[in-house]
Image (cartoon, rainbow, N blue to C red; front, side):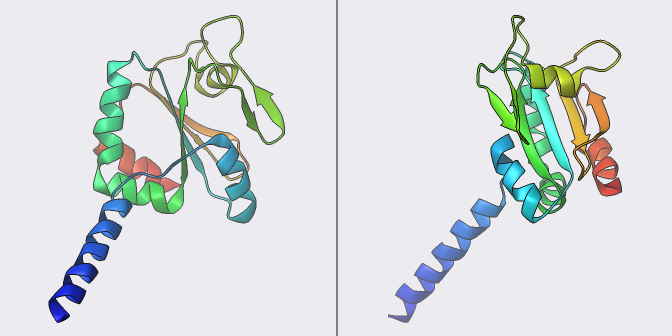
Length: 150
């Protein structure tokens, strides 16, 4: 009987450990509610499905244990596909894909020097103002001090 209890306890612990090893990514709607309860800076990762660099950053930078820990603790993370057809409502305003290929919200968040580069990592402060836009791939070692600043 003790062995069965020990096995169940160990199994529960391993399941819990696996769940916390993932980056928590929210929708804009979820963040809107969370911001009202516990304001935090937002990290919005603007990407496209066809972008190999975007895919690489998701699989390396955002899977780094230190980066995940900082993001899960101190930020709300949102992934925004710049070509999504989905209408996004965020703090009472709706955004959608316009006549072009790029979603309206992606244009607002990722446009820097009159161009959009994929990926673009955007940090919004607690008041939802753009604090930082970083275009292109960011290594974990380069992202960590940026995140620690916020």
